[in-house]
Length: 256
Length: 367
Ligand SMILES: Nc1ncnc2c1ncn2[C@@H]1O[C@H](COP(=O)(O)OP(=O)(O)OP(=O)(O)O)[C@@H](O)[C@H]1O
Ligand SMILES: [Mg+2]
Image (cartoon, rainbow over the protein chains, first blue to last red):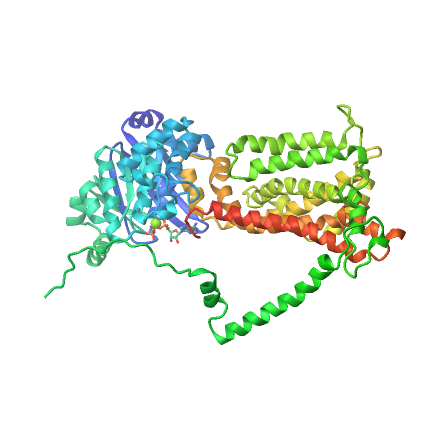
C-alpha cells in the first residue's frame, strides 16, 4: 500500500489490519488477518473457543505483539515504538471478560487513575468526569465502594466507565458478559447498546447474538486463526455461506 | 392453588450471640467433657510455666540497690541491669552526649507516628520527613563533627542504640532494594535478570555470619590502599544486602500472586510499566506480602546480634560483656532474660502493627 493511499483512508478508517500474522512459539494463532473498521462502525466477532478472537483484538492495543503484517490504529502504525503504543492505548479502551478492576482502589479511584496519571487531568475535574460516566452506567451511588463489594454486572459496568473516562475513540470488548450470571448480562449489554448509539467505534467479541443483531454493522466469524466469513448481521444469521459458520451457528443457537 | 405471601417481612436486628463473659466461657471453654479437661490441663501447664518465671522475675527479684550485695532474694538480680543501664542502652557513647541519641529517638518516634498512624493524614510530608530529612539529621546528630557537636566515632556506639541503628538502616535499605531486585528478577531484559538472580542466589546461599565476616575482614583487602570504610558502615552494607536478597524473594512472591489481567488493564488504560507497577501492581503485591515482609524484618532485627563476631558492641554484646565483669560474675541469666525481653517488645510491636495494617488495607476482596 502506498503512502498516499494510506493517508487518504486515515480520515474515515479507525482500524486497519493488513496481512497480519501471529505465532505463539511454533503455534500459528492468527493467519493473514485483513480487516478494516470504519469510524463509528460496530463489529461483532464470534467463533469457537480457541479460534483467536481474543488474540486478534488484543493485538489492536498491543497487549499481544504481532509478528507479520501491519496494524494501523487511528492512522498510527503499531511498531515497537513505545511512544506510539502509549498513544494508541490512550485512544483505545478495552473491557475484559473478568473485568480486571483494581481491587485496592475505590470505584471512583479506578475511574480517575488513568485520567490523572496519563492525561494529567486535575483531580477534581477527573472526579467530575468519572461521576458523569458512573451515572451513565447507572451506578453513581457505588462510587466510594471497593470493587470486591459489587456484583459482577456492576463491576463490568464500572470497567466500562473506567475505559470511557479516558475518552477513547475506539472500544474493544472481549466477551464482556460471559463471566456474568444471566440476569446481569442485560444491564451490561444495555450500557454497550447506548454506547453504540452514540457512534462509538466498537469491536466486540461476544456470543450474544441478540446484541449482534441489534447493534452490529458487521459480524465476523473466526475459526482456527482465520476470518472465515464477514457479513451484516441479517445476512450472517439468515444466510451463512461457509459450512463452518453454519455448524457454529447451529451449535450456539441450539444451546442458547 | 398457588400460595402467595402478601406481607413483607420486616428487617430485624441480628440475634444477640454473646451473653457476657460467663456465657462465652461456657460456650468456648466448658462445652463438652473433653473441652473441660483440655481447658483445665492447659491452664495448669500455663500456670506452672508462668509461675516460675513470675516469681523469678518479679516476686523474688531484687530491684533496689547498687551492688551485687544488695541482691539477697532467690530471684533475678535486676540491680545488675540497672547498674549498667547506661552502657546497655548507649554503649560507650560519651555520657554527656547521650542526649543526642535521645533526641534522635524522639525525632524517630515522631516520624514513625506520622508515617504509620492513621491520625496523620499528609503521608507525603510524613514520607519526606522520615525517608529524606530524618536520616540526614540522624547522621549529623549521632556522628557529629559539625554544628558544634563533638565527633563520636562509631566504635563508641553500642548497646540498644547500635542495635536500633543496625536494624533500622538495614530495614530502610532492604525493602526498596528488595523491590528493585524482585522487579529485576522478573524483567524481560536478560542481563538485568541474570544480575539479579545471581545476586539473590549468591547472598541467600551463604550464612549472614560469613557475609558480615567478608564485609569486615575481606573487603578491605580488595579495596585500594587508603580507601577505608568504617567498620559499622561495612556491617550495615553486609546486613542490608543480605536482607535485601530475602526481601526480594518475599516481594517476588507477592508480585507473582497478582493476576496478569491487572497489568493488562493498566496498560490498556495507557499506563506505562513504571506507573502500572507503582500504582497498581506493587501496592497490591506489597499488601499481600505484609506478613512475610514483617517476618523478614523481625528475623533481621534479631540477626543484628551477629555483629558480635566482627567486634561491634550491640545490645547483646554489651550485656554479655557485662556478665564477665568481676563485680558481677554469675549474672548471665539476668543479662540474657533482659536482652530477650527487649527484643521481644520490639518484635511483638512490629507484629501487632502488621496485623493492624493488614486489617486496615483489607478492601473487601479475598483472593
Ligand atoms: N499466551 C499464550 N501462549 C500460547 N498459546 C496461547 C496463548 N494465549 C492463547 N493461546 C492459544 O491461542 C489460541 C487462541 O487463543 P484465544 O484466547 O485468542 O482464543 P479465543 O478465540 O479468544 O477463545 P475463547 O472463546 O475461549 O476466549 C488458543 O488455542 C490458545 O490456546
Ligand atoms: Mg477469548
